[in-house]
Image 1 (cartoon, helix red, strand yellow):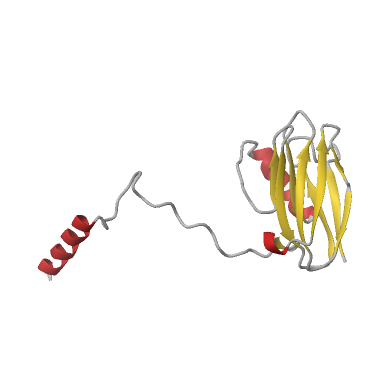
Image 2 (cartoon, rainbow, N blue to C red; image 1 turned 90 degrees about the horizontal axis):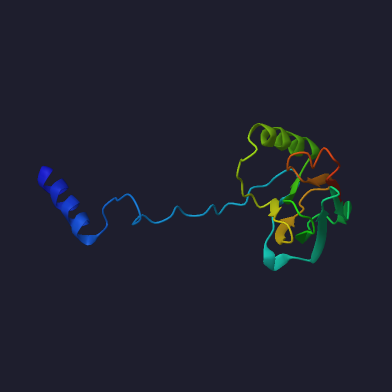
Length: 159
C-alpha cells in the first residue's frame, strides 16, 4: 500500500498535477448559480427587453425617482454619476436596503460586488442587468454615508 501511495504521489509531482500554493494555483471558479431575491434575480444580458438610464447627482437624487416594469421583464440599467462624489445604485426591498445601510455604517470600507449593485465613480457609468420575477414595490438607493438619509432612494413598481 505504501508503494502505491508513493508511486501515485511521485507521478503527480512529475506530471505537474501536485497540490501547490502561490501563483501557480488556478483561480477559484466563479459562482454559476443565479440567486433569487425577493426583488428578482440577475438578468441574462441576451434577454434584455429595454434599457433604463438612471442619473445620479450630488443633490442626492436619482432621475427618474420612480420606474415601472412588467413582471418577468429583464432590464439593463445604466447608472450615470454626474456628480463629483461616489454614488451607487443598490436594488432591494426597503428593509433590505436599510439593513445594508446599517452594515455600511459599521463597516464603511466594506467592499462588495453583487449583481444588484452598481458603484459609480464621479463622471462614470455602470451597467446592471436585472430580471424582475415578482410583482410588488421595490427600491434602489445609494448607501454611501449620508446619501440614503438625504433622500437618494427611488422606487421600482413591478406590475
